[in-house]
Length: 454
Image (cartoon, rainbow, N blue to C red; front, side):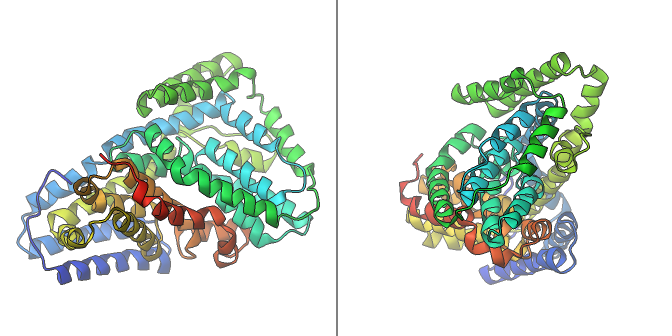
C-alpha cells in the first residue's frame, strides 16, 4: 500500500484492541466533547507513535510511515486547492448562480417532495457541498413545507437525499475528489462509474417521493425572492454557461481532472473580468479568500459567499493528518495484521464489496466522520481489491455509496448534528425518508458481483 513495510508484526488480537482504542478515542472527542476532528486524530497520531516506540520501532521509521501516508494524498491536496479556485471563479462568472436559478425554475406543481429532492440534487451538484446546500436551499424548503403543512420528516429526508446525491456526483465535491484520489482513479471516470448505483438509487428515490407527495401545489413567494436576489447580483449572463460547458467537454474527452478544472477556472475568471467588471486585484483576492455576496437577502448571500483557496485548508489539513495516521497504522503493523485475516476470508467479489461497505459504514457510526470513512476504508481495502482482480473504480464507488452518503444518517456524526440543527428535524426522524442515502449501500452490494475487473 505505502512505500514502507511494517516494522512490527503484532498479533491479531493486539491489532484489533489498539484499533478499537484509537477509534474509541476519536469517537469520544468528536461525539462526547464536540471537538474538530483534527484534534483527536492528532492525539491518535501521538499515541500510535508512542506505541511504535514501545514496540521497538525507530522514530525514523515511524516518521517515514507518516510521510508515506500523507504523500498518498498529495494529488488530492493540489486538486482541493484548485477546486477552491474553481468554486470562487464559477460564482463571479455567474456559473453557480445561473445553475441555482435554473434549479428554482423547476419548482411548481404538486410533487412537492420529489421536486425538493430533484432541485436540491441539481443545486447540490452545482455547489459540490451537501452541508452548504442543506443550510441554504434546505432551510428554504423546510419553510415551504411548513407553509403547506407537509411532513417535516419527509421534507428533510428529500433535502438530505438530494444534497448528498449532489455531494456524491459533483466534480466540485471534496469527498468525491478524495475517494477518486485515495484509490488512484480519474475523477470523471469515478463519477461515471458511480452512475451504476447512483442512477438506480436516484430514480427509485424520486418515485418514492412522488408517491408520498401531498396534493397541494406549493407557494412560490420565497422562490421569487431567491430568483430576484440572484438576478440582482449582476453575475448572471449568457456566458455563465461557458465554464460548465468546458468542464463537460473535458469530461467527454477524458481530460485529466486537474487540467479540466484549471481550464474551466481560467475561463470563468476571464469571463468574470469581461462581463462583470471585476478588477484583477479583486479577482486574485477572491481566488484566495472566496467571494462575499451582498444582495441584502441573507439566504442568497450565504449561498454565494464561499470558495477560494482558504476555504479548502480545513479539509486539506484533515486529509494530511488522517493519512499520516493511516501510514502509522501500517508501519506499526496494525492494519496489515487485520488485513491478513481479511485476506484469508475474503475471496468472493460480493463478500469483498459487502465488507468494504460494512467497514465504511462502521467507521461512520464509530467515528462520525465521512472523510475518515473514505480514507481509512480505501487504504485498508486497496490491496485486497488488487489481489482479487477488482478495479479501483469499484472500490471508489463503494467508498462513496457506503461512506459519504451514510454520514447524515448517524445522529452523532458531523453531518448528522449539523443537519438536525439547521433543519430543526432530528436525524432519527428524517432517517426513514432519506431514501437515496439508504438505498445507495444496498444497491452497491447488489451490483458487487458485476464490478469491473482489472
